Length: 307
Image 1 (cartoon, rainbow, N blue to C red):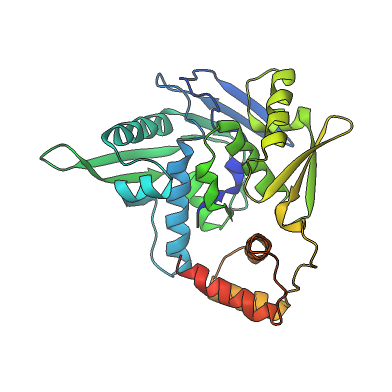
Image 2 (image 1 turned 60 degrees about the vertical axis):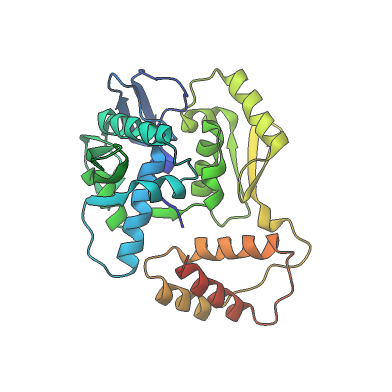
């Protein structure tokens, strides 16, 4: 399952533009100060972030399996593209290289806390990258990515959340960013509310407020987000609620013993997020009445381990 680090879900580090974005971004919220500086190639985009999500997912899978990990990841380019719901054409490989260039060129200066430490530092979203090509045809075979120490430390401290696989089906940058915020803040709660003004600030959108509000209302009409429904309330407030909560049958109750078993099967996992994912699956499959919800949940977790 795709994993995302909490810091970049909380703070707007990526451009939502589909054109080269060469703005210097400054953001401050609740004591966190961030400056994002582009290279001549422009800021890293929310679609470039797919590479980081794939890297974080690979690292977490290795940690959960008890394998050795390092900041340097060796990835198969084809697997990366497929996992991120991208084409595997020659043009897709070219775009992948451009993503690496923007990720390495975009510089972050911040005092964000990761792994329990607050350090003011400057770094690239990735430290370095390398592409290995076949001699004939020039096809990209594998890539080596060296993650920033900041991101690597976040993974080691397991400051990550599981995303819906349908995240990669969201094509519009704002939809991806809004989903990240909903996943981070709503989590397993029934609902979460935020003002349009604060949502605009946390999204990192460069749109004026009236344009941003129109885009949010379009999202409310189309409901594109996995797992969450959006609604507009009085006072310029947007509410996000769990889609799984909109069922007539009471949701199944899981015992703490079943949660402990899930923790044993998947060490380091956010068991409550896992339970929320299971409830969402249960709701999508018609909310059947379960005679043994604990057994159903643990069985689902075992199946999830092999995904």
